[in-house]
Image (tube, rainbow over the protein chains, first blue to last red):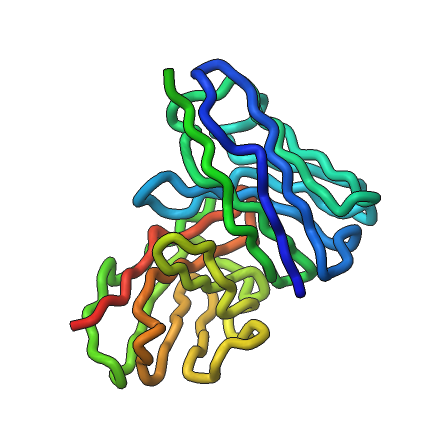
Length: 119
Length: 108
């Protein structure tokens, strides 16, 4: 069964840091790109960033709203991707989903992990 | 940046009726990079359609997608009770990746 499981969410103060994990199983993780997408309560979907596969040199890209503050990495040996979030702002409060992509399909989404930025 | 605009915002229909959802892009999008998702409250989105018209694994054939250029459509031929949900279109032809604001299909 294809599965993505996020963890690491929680409450953090403005200006703080948090690192999310995305554990994958049931597919060839090393061949997949991994995206992070977030959703504030009652709002739509916002792409955060992605990391490509080794074949694509582990290239990363980010939304303008998080560039310079967020980083994405991966460990293909443990089938896990990470989202490092620094200098967090109140507007970063959202449920964060990791999503796997192969070719044209974003074929699996995790259940999401809630990040709350508040003092 | 490619902006996706979905219409209508809310579609109120009865089970068994046909639903037609629109997604318009601010500039041309390759059909390869246009997808549709369904999301129910408290759940993650689920891929319905990829590359404009290809059903994802396990998606029933009452769901179909079409379009090209700047205009794309998701059609649900006969609404089942489980189809009442939020639907999003997505493009990943250009950076950044973008999603439409969503169309809510609710029970009339």
